[in-house]
Amino acid sequence: MNQRPQLQKAIGKLGFFSLAFGSMIGVGWLTGIKGWLVDAGPVGAILAFSMGGALMLAIGFCYAKVMEMLPVSGGEVAYAYKAFGTGESFLIGWFLTFGYLSVSAFEAVSIGIVVSYLIPFDYWPCYVIADTTVYLSHLLLAAALTALIAFVNFRGVGIATVFQSFLTLLLVVCTGAFVIAGIANGSLANLEPLFGSAEGKAGLTGILAVFVTVPFWFVGFDTIPQAAEERTDGVSANKLGQVLLWSIVGATLFYAAVILSVAMVTPLASIQGEDLPTAAAFEKAFDSPLLAQLVLLVALIGLLTSWNGFFLSGTRVLFALGRGHVIHPIFGQPHPRFGTPWAAILFAALITTAGAFLGKPAVLVLVNVGSVCIAIAFFGVTLSLTAILKRSKTFVSPLTWILIGIAMIGSLLILLAMLIPGSPAAFPLDAWEWRILGILSVLGGIVWLLSSRQRGSITEAERKRLILNDQNPDEQNPDDSDLAHN
Image (cartoon, rainbow, N blue to C red; front, top):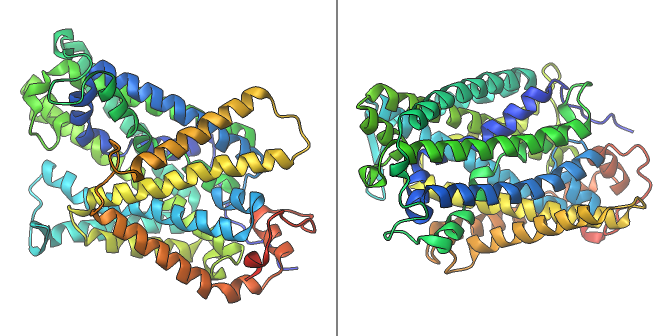
């Protein structure tokens, strides 16, 4: 029996919290807050984010519950395999990988956009996409930072999480500075209208319009299960679940504080038409470009923490698929010296760099595609946990089933809200998102067929040992059909 490939165990509780919290924050709040305030108003937006945070806690509970039973690399890949078999594991893993790497590519595009607001940075125009110029300076910066993140992850997960923790601490300190300044020097009169304006949807409709998009801003807590196997000896699987839930609470408080501070610091009308309304609000209220630059610095830090978190998570999903011979096993081979998934890191770096060449028009498309892929994973986890618990002989409390039910219905509604025309979160039928999702589906089918030889190179019992770390692999998964052996 071959030795099971192992990754370096070097992530502590602070590292996991930073990984999840930093991934959730990102830069969406910098540009999205104007839409939240127009549609729902400050009180309505905070209510929508609180409701969204509660739903994410229910989904996070499912992750924590199944992660406690299966604290292995790849998260959803292992859960789907345990519950349903190889084919479903590949399906979840394929979409989840590109969900994470879509966000990584989005960060690669966004980095040049944010930097160009801080300093003059639009140099050496290369080509035009959708009437938008792509500059060589942006591409070089994206490539350089992708290489840096790949190098940090290649040298060891301990270094990657120290990098993440430092940036997250800096993010919290800088955010605290401008939030306190905004609330202390703002006016309650600026909060009007409390529940949206006439230009937006207003009232309950406006709150719901923001609520259906809230889960997109919380994507990132699910990065913890991807690296669960790399926790240090002092971190139990149970503690890991607690860290995951606290990271969701932290992100909810972050978004609520930013919404309140921006709404109090200046009237909504003064930031209409601004590309970066959060920064514009503080610059106009305090007549201070320096304070606006602090906001942009926070956005830049959030971009890097989100980028590093999703990059790391995408490589772990690929590692789990490769280790189980679901795809080519080279992706499941750790580096002999650094204990990192070197092939998965190289692949993720190539996809991220390629995404940067799509330019600014691709920003929203990449976010939408990534959101759909990750929503599929959310729903898949609730199904996997349900199937695993139904087969277990342990007692499951009614409260647990209620939370699982809320998470299942909520995650399904999130997915349908993005895919059903007419929904506030849906994209048009002629949008590029549909084409990209179609291409990903076709490519997934091709990769599945081409990987048939790799899957057949080991027995299903051996695959179970490799993916689940099951030391008694004779018991077969309930749905291990002929498809699972192909």
